[in-house]
Amino acid sequence: MDKKRLPACPGTLGDHGRKFWRTICSGYSLQPEELMILETVAMNLDEYHACRETLSREGYIMASPRGNKYRPEVQAGKEAFRSFLMGCKFLKIDHEETEKKPVGHPVENRWTVQRERRL
Image 1 (cartoon, rainbow, N blue to C red):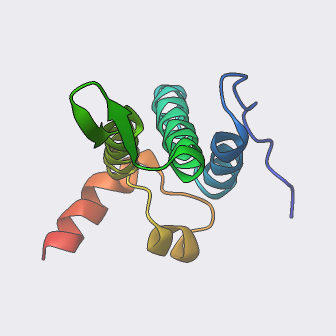
Image 2: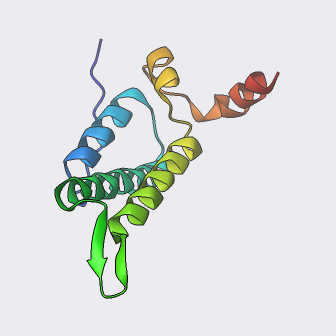
């Protein structure tokens, strides 16, 4: 079997984003416009992990002149992860599909797959 050539990983991605990029690109056939969306999704994953690292190091609560409050990374992490999940949903990426369809889903079959899922 011939190995397919994966699209180059963007330099804007961190460790988690690069790993996600490689995993998705090796399991799915994506069009150029979908690769731009995938880059944004992977960047959101990196941002989420950066927030998690800060929170594990600094804690969730910080002191302020008006009393204790949640660190801004709490909300930023939630938003980054929500955006990550929405991007995955938009690209129709989930763990079950990756296991069932290792080559990806061709563009011409997307409408058929969506209609079959509804039935």
